[in-house]
Amino acid sequence: MILDKSIEMMIKHFDDRKFVFGDRPETAYEGAFNAYVHVPFCMSTCDHCPFYKELYRHVKKCGYHRAILEEIEKTPFVGRLEHLKIGGGTPNLLSIEELEQIINAFKRKTEIGQIEIQLLASILSESYLQGLHRIGVQMVEIGYESFSKEYTTIFSRRTESATQFLNLIQYCRSKDMGVKVNVLAGLPEQRETSFVEDIFLIAEMTPQSIGIKPLIVRGGEVDERAFELVESAAEILVEKGYKRTKLWRFDWLSQDAEMEIPLEDGSFNEKTEALPLLGFGPSAYSRIDGYHQVNPDMDLYIYEQLYGQSRVLSMAIKPEDQQWFQLLGQFYRMDGKTTAQLSNKLNWYLRWLQLSGFIKNQTLTEKGLRYAHTFVYNFRAYLPNPISDITYIENPVIYEAERAFASISIQQMENTLKSSSILGMNVK
Image (cartoon, rainbow, N blue to C red; front, side, top):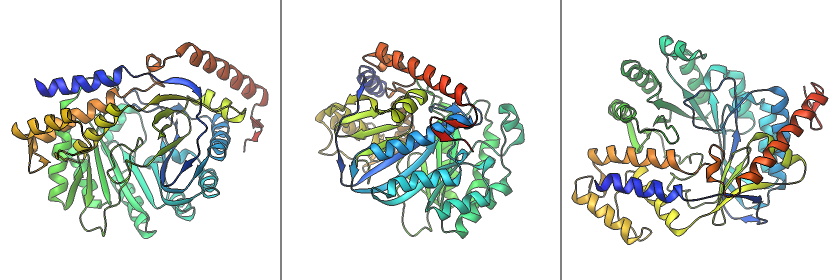
């Protein structure tokens, strides 16, 4: 089947790519750009979460905070920061004062257009939201798993009631802060009836934007059930007055203007995908000067930032990489147009999809949407990630040796300094 073959070709193309661990290129970034700050700490870790994360420890958090301020200070960039996103992990495990210091570190070097932050609702309060408003955050992204007590008991995680969730959204509105709600579809043991009930509840709260994303397991099997849940949610949200603006995103029709919000890797946003993306924090991803760059994991990241080195995992972006990213962006935007930006091979592929009923009037049909789910899912699940899989590193022995040395060094310093300070920073 040609559809299966196209996904197989995409997976094979990226599976052959390798990152090299070495010095960060000494380049000053100029002009407009986006930035992403990764806060990897979580109160508990979930096996189904594909993102880099660390169990929260106050001492380690203090070392992380100082390291990220150092990284922002040392990174050469000149121009306007169009969109700053702080994600995780659980960014609201940082205090308002710590977040303010991170934001101010950027402001000392550049102007910031929009500031967005991901939040865990179960530990979120109105006073924390008030603090975010004070330091200039304009958009909050609140994720949740389910309002069902039965479901949340399975995972032994605190959750919020629908009333608590609505109160948080209303408080954001009172402060003129935009609200984006993220919902995961296809979680283990997730029941369709509970999922649908949650979508109805969220829709009645009318947040500015709702993301319905299938659970992505790196290297795992595609879960068709998750795609079915996304499409069930789409029917409900469109009926309730939302417009489907992306494959996994729905915006409230009454808003004055659509706000473009890039994802972690910046790949899916038509207006911003051409901008450089600078990533800060352990495992953070950058797309700059023709390279994909990934920061090392926590201990090596902290050690190198505080002791003068700043090495990254780098991979040159090839023209064919750009072609696949372009096609990915079009599928995510439900766009079936042939364009000069695509190669003849991929434009021929889009024409075949048109003839086969997957695309009509330059947009994806219902059958095309089903295929787009599979394509985008596989792209995200198989995109090389050297942090989670060292087989994507060309010089893994060097990287692993540096990681081991950094981990021992950090642990020795933590044991010596105990609760008084960590790497020169007082622990409060």
